[in-house]
Amino acid sequence: MSRSNSQILFAIISIALSVFASASDISREDASDLMEECQSQREESIAPLREQAIEDCVTKKRKDREYCESVNKTFGNARARKNGTMIPGMFWDLPVCEEAVAAEKHFKMNPSSRSYNLP
Image 1: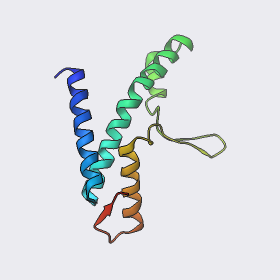
Image 2: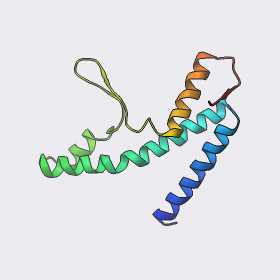
Image 3: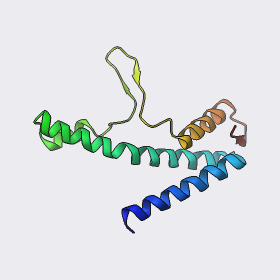
């Protein structure tokens, strides 16, 4: 399957999943699936930016590729600043991620709840 075909298939599945999720209550298992979809979409969005950061490290900073890959392996994830505050992870504002985080928060705050109705 070519990259463009897989991207189209991914988009169709994402839309179907988001329609399904917003059309009904979601279970804990559905929330877990949403989080997996969120992480997948985040990784797809972050990957080209990570590659660019690696290339910039190699060309502009004149560092070894292995070093640059090692330094940038967590590019896009949340990380701590020197003063103790956090730099938030990238692409958590994707709709599927917002839904997944809301569901996860609901289930953590309501351990006995079996389902969550997305607003």
